[in-house]
Length: 143
Ligand SMILES: CC(C)(COP(=O)(O)OP(=O)(O)OC[C@H]1O[C@@H](n2cnc3c(N)ncnc32)[C@H](O)[C@@H]1OP(=O)(O)O)[C@@H](O)C(=O)NCCC(=O)NCCS
Image (cartoon, helix red, strand yellow):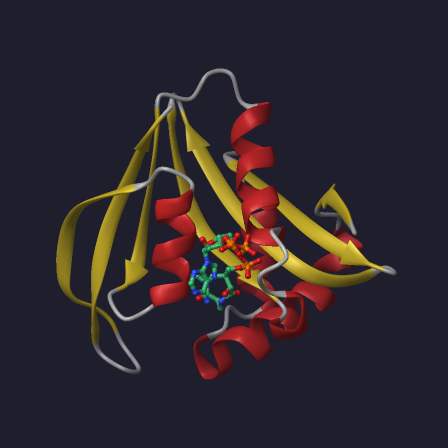
């Protein structure tokens, strides 16, 4: 397993991964590309034999970071890939004070992942998500 900065050649692989993980609500190719090209964005992939099996889209503005998207291919879960993607990105930044994210209230796996990395619940946004409508839990980690 290799963790690498995302390159333009990974866009199709990331799209395939997000389709598997998020179905109809997966980001489009254009969204994935524009996320990668944003100056504030740091996109990372986990590669197994050149296939994208993990993806993290992280953003940083001044000393504040946020997790925009994370996904790991179902057959590769519970192997520490998401943890490596996040921890590796945070460890590389020495100018971060805090990191924020939103997660679906019912996404137990993601909430467990974030709590295992030291994120704490700081609030809730009612009906934040569509398809299906669901509340968002807001989380923060102080660095
Ligand atoms: C959430 C997700 C990214 C986790 O990826 P992962 O590579 O399996 O996570 P890791 O193996 O790094 O897990 C690290 C820790 O998080 C927790 N965790 C992760 N998945 C869990 C699950 N299904 N149930 C309970 N705890 C879980 C555990 O504490 C785990 O450590 P452990 O395996 O030693 O017990 C993955 O399940 C996924 O892609 N889900 C679909 C997409 C999604 O929901 N993304 C989040 C959007 S906010």
